[in-house]
Structures are given as C-alpha cells and as structure tokens.
Image (cartoon, rainbow, N blue to C red; front, side, top):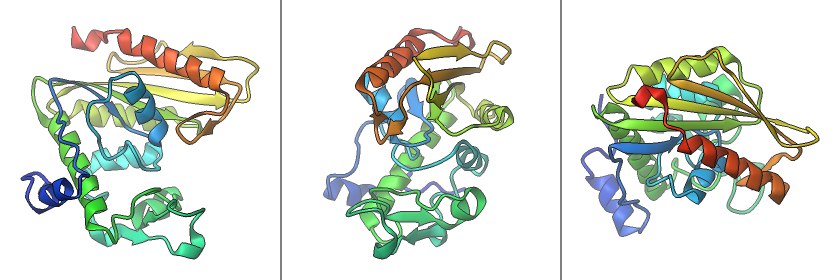
Length: 243
C-alpha cells in the first residue's frame, strides 16, 4: 500500500514551501491523539506531550471512524475521490466547516470532517493531511516504539467499538496503549470512574463533568483545568504493557 507523503516528495516540499509542514517526527516514545476532535490533541499539547501532528488531531471524527481508519490504514481518509468541499452556504461561519468526507458522511453521519482545512481543493491542506498519516503510520509500524494513544468524546460509545480500536492497534509492529476518556456532561461536579475489567493495553475512564466541550476546552474554565489534571495524572502512569 502506498503511503502519501512517505518519501517527502511533492507534498513534503509543498508543505515546507508554505510553512505548513511540521518537521517533528515520531520517536521511540509517543503520545498520539485519536480524536474525536482537536480537544484531545490540545490537552496533550498543553501538557507538552504532543510532539508532532497526526491526522486525527485536528478533524471532526467519531470512535467508529477512527476504527475504520485503522482498519484500512487510513487509505480511505486520504482518498481524493472521497474528499468534498462544503459549499459556502452550508458552512457554519467564515473559515470553518470547510470540508467533508463522503464515506464517513454516509457511514457515520459526519456532515463535516475538516473544520479549518479543505483538502479537496487545497494542495497544501491535502499535503498536511497526508504528512500526518505518514507520521502516524511510522509510529505504529516501527518495532521498538511505545505509543500512548488517547481518545476523548462526549458521545456515548459502545465498548465493543473501543475494544475493536485496541485490537487493531495490537496488530501493529509497535507497542500501543490506548486511554479512552468518555465524557459525561451535566453532572453536579467533576468525578472519574475507572473501568477495571479491561486488558492491559486499554484503559477506560468515564469523566463526569458539569460543563460541555466548546471547541478546544470545556465551557467552564475550572472544569477544563480539572480535566487537564486528570489527563496529566493518567499520562504519569506507566502502562504495565510497557514493562
């Protein structure tokens, strides 16, 4: 299977020319966001854990879409025939809701996948997407690499979907641990419930929060600060999987 941007050729050169290419690359130890929007990646960056950008950092997705991306090694995500620019009259505002993905719209009801980018019409945006896929493939396919993968969503997610993601990660050459954070909004105070009957490669935290996500953070700054501290504490835990 070909890897868009793997050689650094046209897309890498274009990205560098336009100042859009992130020169940082996966290392032997990586913290990686698997979505479901930019909030998870933003927290990892706030904690100085996110060292490079992957394809699911900055798009709107769902756990089922992440599962599909891992199942086909992101080939559908970068399939140009599936990319579609959202007409101006359908956008939510200037510069946002710019691109959709035909397959994920049909399969998961996602009306927008690319909020601030439009890889259907912009070579620079497509290069940025392809480079993210290349980096993530490298992190997952390099033996001796330990990856901490993170996913956070406020949408109810069936356990079998998350376990399927964990199964797919387990098939890669690297060692991978997934932390899944299920946000449940509308609770009177912040609280965390931990699932204890999981395999060593998966950790599931249900986070009760009074406020809802708004873009990069929770609506209440105090709730958001508490969420960041929950993730900071989780990141400090060394998964038994890594020995």
